[in-house]
Image 1 (cartoon, protein in one colour):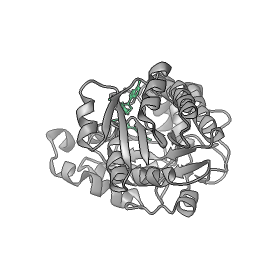
Image 2 (image 1 turned 90 degrees about the vertical axis):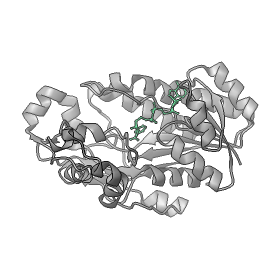
Image 3 (image 1 turned 90 degrees about the horizontal axis):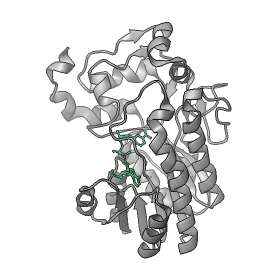
Image 4 (image 1 turned 180 degrees about the horizontal axis):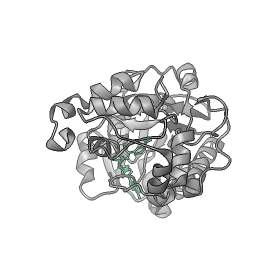
Length: 317
Ligand SMILES: NC(=O)c1ccc[n+]([C@@H]2O[C@H](COP(=O)([O-])OP(=O)(O)OC[C@H]3O[C@@H](n4cnc5c(N)ncnc54)[C@H](OP(=O)(O)O)[C@@H]3O)[C@@H](O)[C@H]2O)c1
């Protein structure tokens, strides 16, 4: 197939392109930042500069590429500072998930592209009720904290628009597997503490496993939602110390709920403390997906082995 990957130069795109090429696909990969064409070309794809927020440019690029399939992996999370408002941090990404998705879907329709797969997210979205692990059939949080309302709405828009158009939305877990993963520096510097009892559940996924699931989704017929997460959704009290150890950092600090509320805000604490994990049963069953890193327990040490050996004075505190 000719596959058009929007966001080929990003964290997941750079893992996805080589796997697609290994499977015999031809890839047209988009980038946004000057100089990232080299990155896309080095992966074996044909680079195309594209701003997904420019619908006319999206239309032109898709019609010119004449792809059989489109993958939307564009986000704007590099160098984002996470403060009290998730909606502020995710603002540009939310536009890529709404306007960007709509532009790509319109272009796909016009170009007669039959297959469409897009990046969605699993953690912090399912209703904070009932058991700790949720399937795609479980309901989403009907009342997300105000500071994440637009972010949740953008992901919901993507899920609904993509599946209504016959495509697949992949609700990935928190990505890890690269030196610049978002959690690496805060955990190394002990700026990411365990909040309260650390009972909120997170789901993770190694970037290579996420890319493998994406290739399978592209080759799968029919619309749907899939949680692309590992086998072990886990409370913060378990995964965070393991991540610190894998990075060769000191154990995380602990902060009581009241202090976290003061520093990070009520919304963030509500999400962290009440969050639910996600089940990957459907993706394994329907896509035939197997994981190289079934749990973050193996994945974190594998991802950060070299990093831990390069411990700096910051890590040793
Ligand atoms: N599920 C998750 O946990 C999740 C999801 C996404 C990202 N992240 C994390 O966020 C961090 C940064 O991610 P990242 O390195 O992938 O960078 P990023 O800035 O999120 O970019 C992702 C991709 O989208 C492209 N892009 C950005 N703005 C665009 C626009 N307006 N139009 C079209 N394409 C656009 C980027 O192009 P350029 O590279 O050319 O700028 C890149 O190819 C990483 O630590 C990653 O793990 C986590």
